[in-house]
Amino acid sequence: MSGEPLVDRQLIHDELDRARVEFHQLLDAAKPADLSLPTRGTRWTNEQLLFHMLFGYILIRPLLALMRIFGQLPHGVSRAFSRLLNSATRPFDVINYLGPVAAVRVYGHRRMGAKLDGVIAGLHRHLDAAPEAAFTLGMHYPVRWDPFFRDFMTVTDLYHYPAQHFDFHHRQLTLTDTC
Image 1 (cartoon, helix red, strand yellow):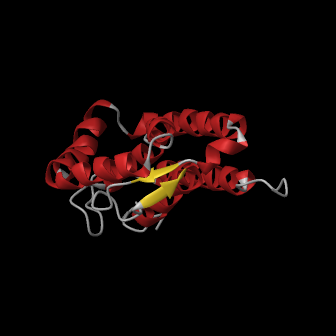
Image 2: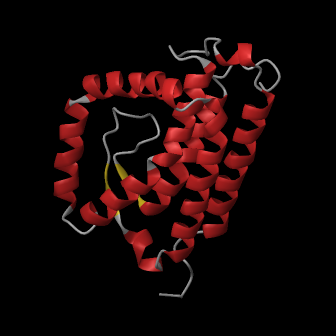
């Protein structure tokens, strides 16, 4: 092996920072009336979709923990697990929709920026602390759950996932001063 790093950590750091800045810009520019407007192509309001975008980042740490487990096992184990999850797509879709609907009633948009800041800071620390060998891990994912899940994803793919998710949903927002 040439000693070259397996992953461009700076690229991931830059993606994390870009999303954090853009998320704060969205929150800062959102008028109260905008938050309750419907979004493009979803059943969520802007506020609910903003929470869903935040949740894409919250999920990464638990998904990395699963990756540490399944990445050590034969690929057939994660393939069977992903098939099981794919078979539960309908209940997942209901939970995926209702989660942000309920969350904004408790959490609200005022706290979302601080939460994302903490999550991103944790991901930066986790990324910096990860040994190079961690990036060789991979597992199968339930492709019916999210358009950005691929059949087999590596740790690197998982770090890039929330930016793809964020950018996709950003285009669905209907905030008047930010779109």
